[in-house]
Every structure is written in structure tokens, then in C-alpha cells.
Amino acid sequence: MVADAYRSGHARVAELVSALPDDESGRAVPACPDWSVHDLLAHLVGTAADVSARRTAGLAGPDWTAAQVAARRDADVADLLAEWDRHVDATAEALEDRRVPTTVLGDLLVHEGDLAEALGAPQPPWDGWASAASVLVRQVVKGIRGRETLVVRAGGTEWRSPDDAEPDTVRSVLSVDLYELYRGLQSRRSRTQMRRWDWEGPTDPWVDALPVHGPRDDEQPVPPPRR
Image (tube, rainbow, N blue to C red; front, side, top):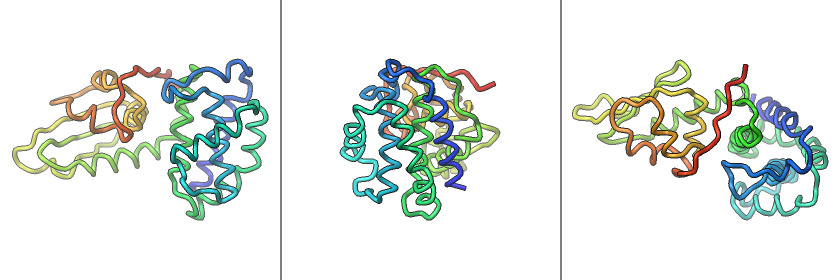
């Protein structure tokens, strides 16, 4: 299951960037402003290569990712994709065997959205990210404790923070598109964008508390839904 999700994510990203002219690979990625499209792709390829070679010390840390990008600075998009192809199966198998955490898959899915938004492509298909989004929403909402409670309605599902049934709570109710919620929780939407969501009750402190990598203030591109 996890292996299939990784393979399909790889295929979608490869399709997205395979026809990209080399001069377009230098386009900035709004969600990762220190990286270009080329840099982000180099990170994804480098992650697969490192997992395949079992070089996982420091996995997902800044030094680990910076080394992946630096090592592939002179590779073109075709070279990067060819390298990734060589390591897809080993990475998928490592995920399936739980030799590496599922954050490797999560990282791919988040960056797929980053690339789609950077290139003006439609949002990735529902079956690519929806399961990961639901798991993330559940983890975040179930971790909310205290007098300020939250109810989240997205994608036909409702999640409630554990203390929502307690007396004297201050409840906020959020109704939002699941893709937008997923991107917001992954710190891919600004405070202003999150405030535009459909809220009942207080918006704060949620625009600061919900993004798992911290809040941001730079407006992010919102892709059109896939037809």
C-alpha cells in the first residue's frame, strides 16, 4: 500500500516535470522559497538515492537535504529523472518494510503539491494525497487539548478535538476543502489565506497553531481543482 503510493507519486511528479524546458527548471518554488524546481526535484531524487543506499543518518534534516541538492547542481531534469527511476523500487520496498519512516512518502506528496503550485498545474489527484491528508488532520486535531476546542469538517468527514465535549469550552468550527486544509496544515498557506476559510467562532489561535511546520505570511498560489 505504502509502496504503491510512493510509486504513483513518483510517476506523477515525473510526468509533471519531464517535458519542462531546462530554463523553466530554475523557476522559484513559492512554498520553498530557497529552492528552485530543479532544487526540489534534486531533493526528491536524492532522498530516493540515499534511502536505496541506506544513507539515512540525519534523514530529512537540513544538512541531509542540502547535500542532496548540492550533489546534483549540474544535472539536468532528464538526468535527475533517470537517477530517480533507478531507486524507486528500492525506496518503495524500504517504505513497505518499514525500514524508513512514512515521512519519506509524506515528503514526496507535499512536494508534489509544491511543484504543481509552482508550475501552475492543477492540484494533484485526490487519490494521491487524500489518505495522507486525513491521517494528518486526525493527528493534529486529536492533539489539541484545553479549553479552546476545534471541530474540522472537510472531505465529508468531521474531526473534533478531545476536549470539545467538556463544559465552558470556546469552540471554533472550520469547514474547508480538504486539499486546502492539507496544504495549510503542511505550512503551505499563509495566515491570511487560512483566515479566509469558513470559520465559526475564533480564528485565532488556529492560524498559528495548526501549521505543523509553523505559520507563514507569504501568500501561496492555489491551484485549480483537477477536472
